Length: 275
Ligand SMILES: Cc1cc2nc3c(=O)[nH]c(=O)nc-3n(C[C@H](O)[C@H](O)[C@H](O)COP(=O)(O)O)c2cc1C
Image (cartoon, rainbow, N blue to C red; front, top):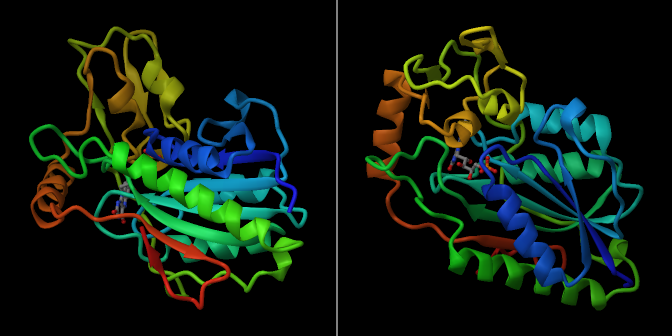
């Protein structure tokens, strides 16, 4: 199958999904064009097209983040193109996220040919309570490239993607309950905040606005993705709600064992291929 160009479509508040998707594209050996769905539409760059589309999302509560699914539905069309699906999770579990992404890809008119689950540093990871710290690392990137090469071989072996067996991935339907509304969101330390607006620019949901002398956060819009806490240049933006800190401690202690990426390919007898 002809495959010279790859469109990389991703939602990635803290950048780990973007890194994985780029690694997969390298392995595919197709000319990549980026379509970053993270920012609000007004801040997003123009559309691109590719013969194959790599779609990447993080796992939020075992699901595709609602905002990512809504943006994909509103802005992306498959038009019969093959798609490679990647979910990135924080070393706990990816649960129904890959199945949901596969179903969404079908709904949008793609032919899903391969899926994978990769590991990225957990959004709630802190230096004191690290969770998958520093991931994806060099070994993860090697695996992302290897996955891309496998997909390339798979597609080189068939005249068209629809000739492959339908892609099977783990997960259950009805999907598990996703992220629930909450009043928890990061806070801003007025002493160290320099009102630069980086937090507002990094926020995928537009939950943050800059007032004359303070930063306002609309908790109902906050995804708790921690893009703002990672991007704040002075460390003024912090997630210090006791429930999140407690959750981070639990993740750090109970999910300390390193998990590895898993691959699922449309030609395999529904058997997962571990990297
Ligand atoms: C609200 C929320 C829910 C999350 N739920 C899960 C989860 O269910 N399982 C898991 O292992 N990691 C979970 N994570 C961690 C992210 O999947 C992980 O940090 C991922 O690498 C983030 O991707 P990004 O860097 O592209 O934003 C969650 C993170 C957030 C913010």
